[in-house]
Structures are given as structure tokens and as C-alpha cells.
Image (tube, rainbow, N blue to C red; front, side):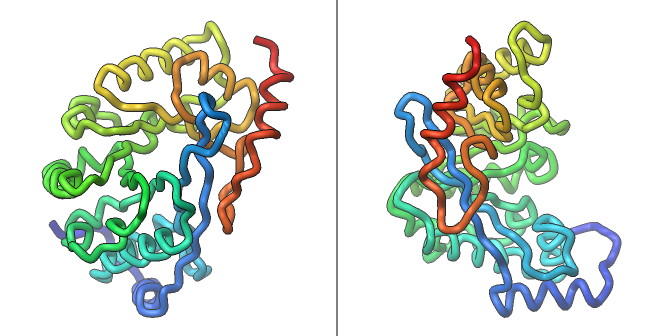
Length: 256
């Protein structure tokens, strides 16, 4: 399946080749917390661009896709993440264009070397544009113990039937659903319903983008299982593990 976008300037394509050839990729980890244990459950490994020609990581992946190097770029991200990650569950983003290449299912891929639970994250739009590829690749990976998370649920692309067909192990609620969340609102009822739907298909729910103690408490009341966001810990390297005490103090100050 070819990448159909307007051709990029030669400078940007050259920068994409350089990023792959020279491993020019940044990496940070953001903690995901489990309120049941009061500890870090796992980490999301987030790639970052280091070349100013790119506006962000998605911009780099688009250029790498047009340059035919997106599979290699994804492998660089996984190699860096596995090398630096603590021995806890690790969430790794996969760009939809990577499903057009065979790198993910290679037996020597670094994702098979993580000693703990490994979860691949795909955005909720990926099943729409790459459904057959997603399903085939993920079926092969799951036979080898890799789990799946649907990222950004609620960002605007949802096809719940396609998502359900992939049977994700985790679903991450988009920041747009969590922002300014409070009891009794229609937004709260929507989040509560989505959490129930996810639980009904066997998925655990991560509320991401948590920035205030009220959002945290209300998302927990709505049934979310895990939490991620700047209130708990910003993306960092090396991975942070000390955010929970501050979080608990914030929660204790919030009326219930």
C-alpha cells in the first residue's frame, strides 16, 4: 500500500534518511500509574525528533514513510526503548505506515527482548486506514505474547466495531475526553459509558492527559483502571518513578 501524500521537499526527505542512517531520534518515558497499588504500573516510550526541520514525531514518520524508511525508523525507536526501559510493562507506539513493512514480525525485532509485558500502541484511526494489515500483523505478534493498546480513543476517528474486532488489551482515553472532567456532566456519563464498553470487551482503560487532581479523581470514579499525564509525571529520561507521593497529596486535597 503506497503512501499517498503530496511529495515532500528534497530537504525533508534527506533529513528523514539522515535520521535513520544516523539514529537521530530522541526518547523519553512517561509513567502510567496503578491506583490499586500506588505505584508505577508501566511506561510509555515516546519518540522525539532532534532535527528542527520536522515539526514533531508524526512529521518525521510521514517523511520516513515517503522515503521508504519508516520500518527502519520504527525499529530504531524500539531498540532505544528496550535498551533504556525499566523492567516493567512497556508501551510502544507504532505508526500506521509501519504495517506496510515486515519489520515488526521479524524474529530478531527488539520488542521480543523486553523482559516484561510489551504493549504496542496504535492510534484509533489505524484500524480504519490499515485494518487488514493491522489485524494480520497483530495476530502474528499476539501469538508471541505481544499485547495491544488502542490509543487516543475519542480523538474523532472512532469505528468501535473495527476496534472491537482487534480485541485490544488496553484502551487509552484521549485527553479531549478527560479535560475538565467533573461529576454529573454529560462528558462524565460519556466517559463512564466508554469505560464500561471497554471493560465489556475485555480491555483495561488508561485515562491519559491527566493534568489536575479533579480530572484524576473523576476519571477514577468513571471506572478508569490506570492513569497517565503531567500531574503524575512528565515524559523524561531516565524514566521517573517518584511521582506517586505528589499525586496522592493532590488527590487527598480534592473533595470527594
